[in-house]
Image 1 (cartoon, helix red, strand yellow):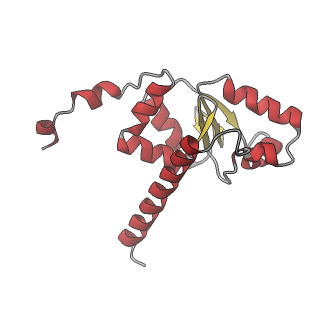
Image 2: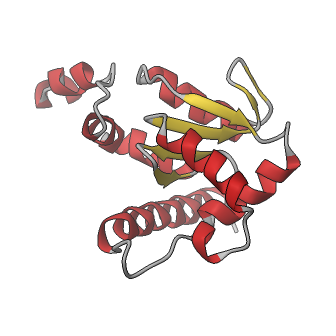
Image 3: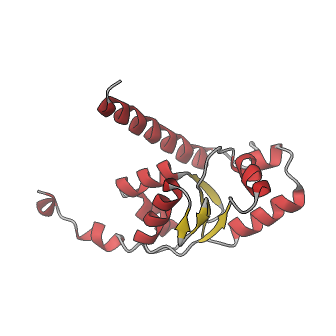
Amino acid sequence: MNSSLFRRVIQQYSSIRALNNISARFTSSSAESKTPAESSSIDPQFKQKIDDFIKSNKVAVFIKGEPDAPSCGFSKAVLQILNLHGCDFKSQNILDDQRLRDTMKLYSNWPTFPQIYFDGEFVGGCDILLHMHQSGELVNELKKIGIQSKLSDVNNNTTPSSAN
């Protein structure tokens, strides 16, 4: 498979995952579906610590490494996107705690890291955040949770004539 075709397949797959994740967030009700954390065998006290961290921060990320020294390219990309938008966020280094790393995969029903949460809701991973950033959707999603993106002025000042 040539590399450009492969990239297009990956981009389409990422877009479909992003849309499915967003769709699921808005179409499922808490009464009719349980979160993966509720249906799996996560220690209730540990789950409560995770819940508290996620719900007490408008933007919470679970990354490999620290914000000033990410340990993988995907974590670095997520941090760069959040910083580009001027987001305040709190992070947890999943490399420091194997139990946290294993539990977060069950909690979110998402097998990879980083994992991003906005206002207590799971958003997805690097691919979804990147897609949201590239499409301009991230500015709107941040606005919904009370965060003014640094890029909102840039997006508002763009005119069709400046795009030529």
